[in-house]
Image (tube, rainbow, N blue to C red):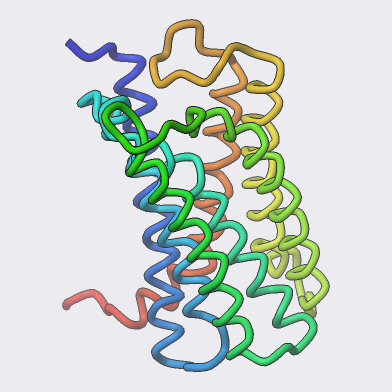
Length: 234
């Protein structure tokens, strides 16, 4: 029987995956409406993040221990998605050529793919063994914190504010950065990362709070255009 507390956090991961997927879909539509402006990279960044949150659901079936590639996706996927978001805003800030952005994004995605592929090939019965992918989580989340703060600053610099509502995207990125900071801090000072909820820290509650609030704030920006694309039936 599934622990109720475990099920609650599993539901939160599925919620985060859904919210992140909705943001990814918005940027996918934007990339089709306005090609060549980097929206496709943002769609990929948020889409990879959504898939990474979904991998947590596999832990309920015990697949995380049997298929090490899932651990690698969980460890590296969110970092890759965050890096793609940061690269997009950096290239736009310095007006770098969009084809270069696509090339750089493809390169870092290839590196992440190799990382995940190595873990798929390793493990019991594999050609070689590697350290548990989850050992990288604190370092990856720390890097994500700085990438999200950088993204928030880049977006805020480009805003021509007419009201505080215009700062929703930078604030959302700061909330997501707090999520990563909370996770990194807890893992650096706590026990090794485990998928069970035994001995779970209050930091986890704060982490989900920052994450959900940040994603909901992003949705307040992307939902009005989505509603125009999919008007309600009379």
